[in-house]
Length: 209
Image (cartoon, rainbow, N blue to C red; front, side, top):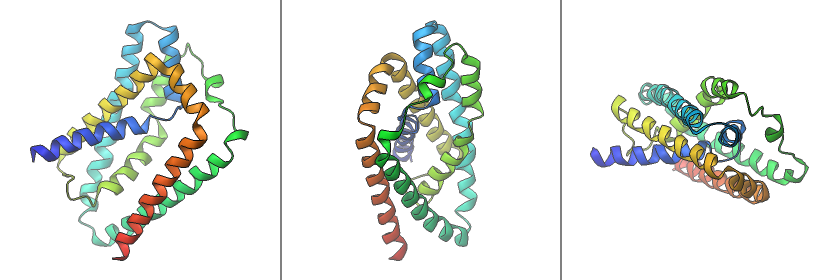
């Protein structure tokens, strides 16, 4: 039991880091706050954004416990995972092909002095529920994932810590990270598309066996 909790905590950290790895409104906002605000303000923003991750993760993942008891719905979930992974792979691949024609507008659109707007966006982020629902459907069949309230809470704490780590990295070396992702965005997107496609095929084979 302890070993599984440790795995879920570490996995939560990884998922939290992955969720904010690619530059976005929040990432770039944290970087700009680190350049224009005090360390105290930066710590407050990072703490709020990372803590918000806990209720989002816990509520969505806890709902999976009920879903596990619904056999028909589980069958639907298995095939939904395949569809979601392949669709995500397709759009990521498509985006990578058109990467030259895209411009990073997020950096220009962000108001660096408006920390309240950044915090509100993090709290009422419309993408959080859907993101954790997708992770929940992925983990729902994993035998090593404990679906108790305590273990899900441990996973949520790990996810919160992962978010704090990646955003802190953006705060202290954001310029280098943004530059790296911008210059290698096409290769990164192709790599992510390949991983998603592979996971989709693996899940497809599992469904058919």
